[in-house]
Amino acid sequence: MPNALVASAKVLETIDERLLRCGISRRAFLIFCSSLMIAAPYGLAITEKKTPEEVAAGLGKVVRPPVIWLHFQDCTGCTESLLQTSHPDFGDLILNIISLEYHETLMAGSGLQARQALDEAVKKYAGKYILVVEGSIPTKDQGIYMKMAGRPALNVLADIGGKAAAIVAIGSCASWGGIPSADPDPTGAVGVADLLPNKSIVNIPGCPPNPYTLLGVLLQYASNGTLPEADELRRPKFAFDRDIHEHCTRRAHFDAGNFVKQYGDEGHREGWCLYEMGCKGPETHAGCSTRHFNEIPDVWPIGIGAPCIGCTEKSVAFRIPMFQVVQLHTIAAPPTSFAPITTTHGSMSPLATGLVGLGVGALAGAGYVASRKFSKEQGYDGPPGSTPSNSEPGDDA
Ligand code: SF4
Image (cartoon, rainbow, N blue to C red; front, top):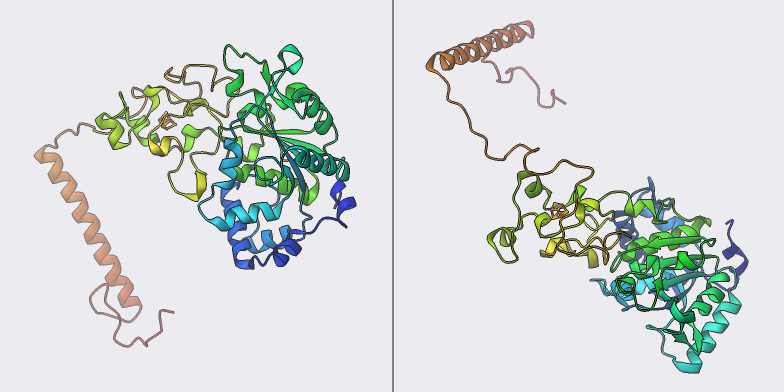
């Protein structure tokens, strides 16, 4: 294993060792691996062209990656989305697959105890841990708007981020400022990459993001020391390579020109397209339309009747009004460029009907003659379509 985790393998367990020690069944782990493959199927190295058994066998040998999770200006929604899985086993599994060394929301300690735990984790795993950052960082007025144990959050990020092997900015706030950076941006909120541009950083934007994307990134790093291929906004391509509109469950209504005009109207109740309500799906890259939340089908904004706000795009969510209709750059505008779903059929003259009937009759006659000829060549003269009487059971096989 070529990464820095090898050096700490003596103090960290493999995933298999941990699952065995905690009494988690192989079956539960296999189901988890299947979910990971479904949730993050595009180009994720650990799942590519493998069966769930092969993924589980490979992942089982991986040393659990030490993770330090820091909260800055956030609402804790990213943590909630990670924990609010529909099956309790999944939440347990996630926490058993990574080695979560510090997380303010989940840990029992607080105050001095918590601070000591953070200092110890940073010292013990310096240069080896993955830092997950949730929330934006305030920069105005030397960062006085947020302090952690008396230190400006700016300094804390520079210190702990500087010692990390890699950083994952989870959520839109940590990626590029998110809600706190919306106009008038009173704290000068920015994302991690604005402050540490030279570090290995993966942005997983979303409000909240899909937890499987985070798991995919962490497990790929732990298994082979690499981060997934990213786009120009540092988002992993396996999860952000297509726009929501491409696979939206309401796309047929967009193409047919059926649009909701007002919340609660007939179209809204019928599940029509939300484009005219300001849906940002056509210019938002994310996997929400195919990877729903909490493992429940249709649990995602558009699935429950709310337009996409474009939370995974730096220039969309919290930048342009939610009701504003977006420009269609990659597709033609509805409905003029698409075939209407109710087409007008012309009527057929009696002469044309007769000619078609003649053609169909000729084809049927030719088929009958051909099948008789074939039956005779096979030594059978019964009616076409019936089985020769001298055939033995099993002859067809
Ligand atoms: Fe779905 Fe929005 Fe596209 Fe309509 S505009 S099909 S609701 S993504």
